[in-house]
Image (cartoon, rainbow, N blue to C red; front, side):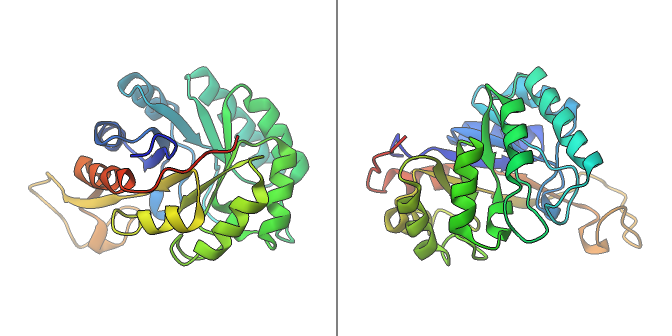
Length: 256
């Protein structure tokens, strides 16, 4: 993999974080509730993963699923979760706040960025839900966030290559554009070489069988019945395959 193209892998368990590290990921983004886009993981999970992996660890700061317009109480939760992530020695956080009209909530985002220091801050895919990607880019630069995770405003990064390329150009090195959304070993080379993004993010969980010998499949707790006894984890080989594909990309000169 070109050294200038770090791979961040999303994980929601210790096993997945370890698989990401063993597979060659440069960074783990730790979340819970991946089926709902990711929410803030527990302090116990953050602490255990931090003690088990040596690569950079970024923690999702998202108090609930759904939209990214937060109440005063939810904003307070986000601040407390950032302080917890700092205390537990995370290297960074991922967050995003929007106004009701789809613009970036500059004031509150900036407050969270300042509270996070010296941790690195990623403005996550709330960016893709904004009403104007290029205005949002400028607003996020103003907040002091280090990077933006984006699919170019499309369902996945491959469909968003044109917007991603224009966003990278518009960023002028003031913020790192990290491509995410549907990135796999068979498409990452095309995405990187067409857009010149300096970083990539992948959520590559796969279903594994439950060890439960007895399974009451008439009901499911907190999941559709067909998923009640499924587990979804990051597999080391999936990360390795993605890293190998990144090795084949033409080096991208980072502008920071």
